[in-house]
Amino acid sequence: MGSKDYWKANKIKHSVGSFGISSVTYAYLSDHTKHKNLNEVQKRLISLSTALIIGTLKETIDSLSPNNEASWGDMRANIAGVLAFQVAITIPLSIKRRSLKRRDIAYQKI
Image (cartoon, rainbow, N blue to C red; front, side, top):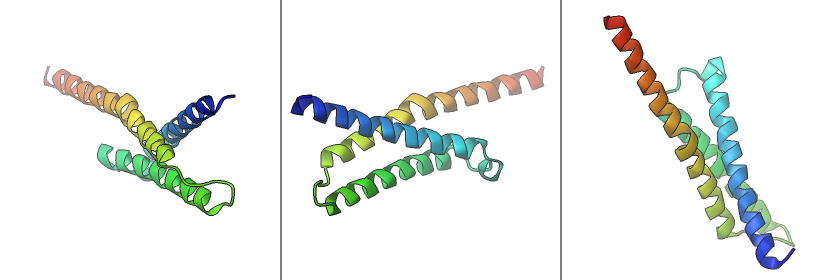
């Protein structure tokens, strides 16, 4: 695999990893009875923060290891993955929940 292909694949892995960490965190917060009282914004912020903290820790460890170094490109890829999760998953879910609530309210008035 060429150098350019390696770097492209590496950034995709970072983005997908951050997307996955955000997804798992958000799903856990949404399904676990202990955390169901959190509002939507809190769940989004926690899932976003968790993925970014893990990405930052990974880059910090890379900077301390002798063969690797921290990469701002990797952090940008992490941020892209987290933002993709927010745009692709949580925003549409929020819109769907609001429309369901409006529909339920409309049925209750009838």
